[in-house]
Length: 144
Image (spheres, rainbow, N blue to C red):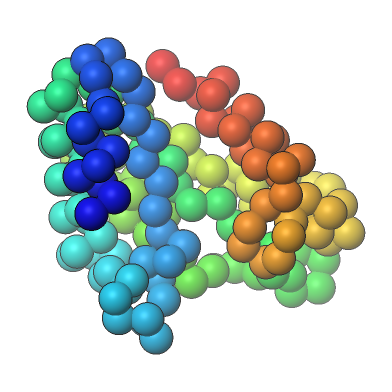
């Protein structure tokens, strides 16, 4: 029901950033799980269509990678990699701009290494304020 509430606050000309994938990939939590090639894409299409119907501008953001390492590199693929791929496919299909935060974070974290990356996180998925600000900057500079 959160989307319905959010939709009431969207106005013409607003940017609506749509980012899902982390919790959608949890097969062991059926109330959160969505299939990346079916229900996940269907929900993205719905959010895009309903955003556009309000005169707003949808903008997709792929999920960032988790802070999970395999030696000196971020472990890939991750459980939500198929969701990132699905989001890019829907972006192309619906002619929606997007930022590939999945690739940006993977490349950046591999460059700065495990210790520096870990300092940006509360746990393996949730960034601290410094990590969130970094990602928000990457997103903001890529808005059309």
